[in-house]
Length: 64
Image (cartoon, rainbow, N blue to C red; front, top):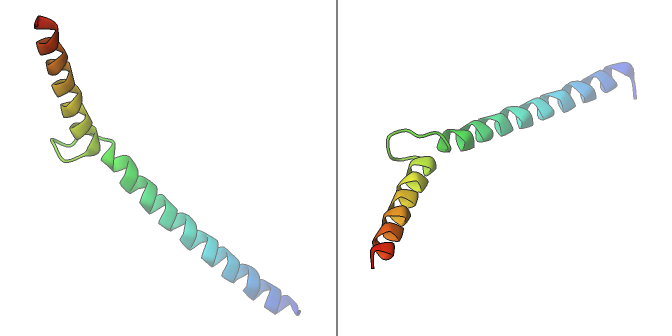
């Protein structure tokens, strides 16, 4: 292979790797966004509500 073909190969490989890493970064940011409280619709908020309900149930059960 000639030097221009090698340069084209490495440029293409860099472009593919860059697009994979940008896509992965986009996905990770979306996943991390779900772990931040945002007034009710995130996973973090739902878990917090469930924990409060479970704690309330334990209090009710301990009163019996």
